[in-house]
Length: 108
Image (cartoon, rainbow, N blue to C red; front, side, top):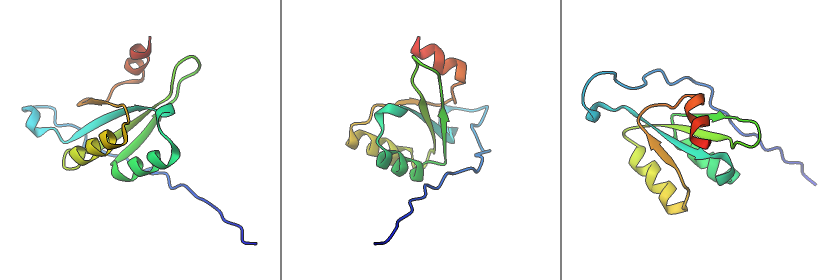
């Protein structure tokens, strides 16, 4: 009998480009997809993690839910959004990275 070991790769690189401060929305360089952790299965999470530039987890204590924040570059955000829609995954899309306090306020 063979033993199998499954290892999940975690991205630790920082995304430093961020958003352009000045200029019209056409200069937007990244989008932030907010998804509740409980809404994703492991395989879905891993697939989305591979497609995003950065994946972060905002953890909260009960009774609040944990959130995934996927940072996606503008060149691939349409395909990322299409993938979410095809799988029926609920998400929020924002141009600015919400703070922890803003996420908490949304759940109140």
